[in-house]
Image (tube, rainbow, N blue to C red; front, side, top):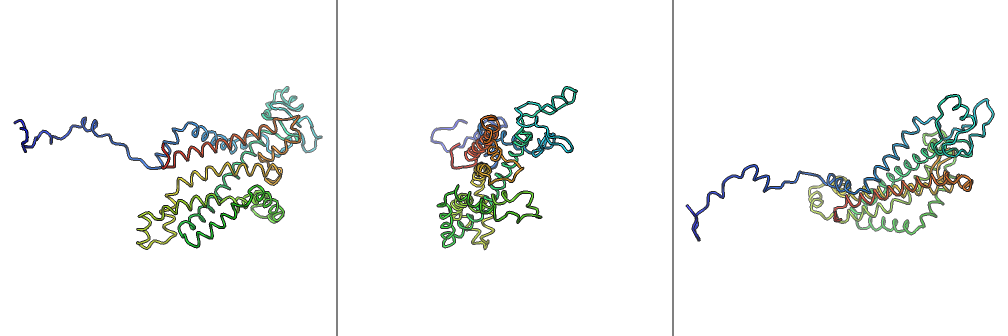
Length: 352
């Protein structure tokens, strides 16, 4: 029966269950996801950041695995062999150039691995020295960033959650460290610590790492945590007033538990971004300290020390200065662009 105008009669056809095809057409269901998965998807859409990520991975893997099968070591002087006279033909070779001895071996049919970047003034293969220098720079940048992360996150979370007099004292210390000239303090601390720790590590596990690297980590732990601490403090100041924090406090949860279980996980995006942007800063600091002679101990190479050694023959062999400078620039640029991509992907306040 047709429904009349102004009638209270119910049309039963409106209550017929929808078919599967009608449900698929009417209901557009989005698959369940997490914040991390959504952020990774946004990151992969950023072509520049993704390319930089693969460049960083390639350089890191090359720095780790190439020395395992490369026939030359970073400290091996090819022209000096026990019981034989020094062969100066290995010194100052151009890229892909062979020494007199190697040319003789090749003429006899033996296989000789070429010197891709040539050799230095002491007959050491420059390619493997650049690879080792990249490994040292990446390792120092990574571990220095971890030190900065641990110290900055701990102090920043305590200042933000405790507030009051504790926050006031910590922030005044941060302001004092911020007022110090960074480069001057880094050079002074590195110089002083180098003298103080000279010989103090003999016979210990840290002796192989070297006093200069240890002093470099101490410099990062003393000076470079302040930016991370201020960022974490600002985030926790806004998060500690949320309802779930008040509920945890009302339930009797301790401050340490609230910080570890609620506040730090909600600062995860800021922590990732800040750490990613701290690594290139640490690499650059290590490079210019090594350039000034305050970095790694010889004969262990670093990109900065390689550039410093290349200054003596820059007019005759400019490639020795250009190659480590290009590697430093590529690493720092890739890390900075990747950090910008992480910030755009993991910061929910930005429009994506």
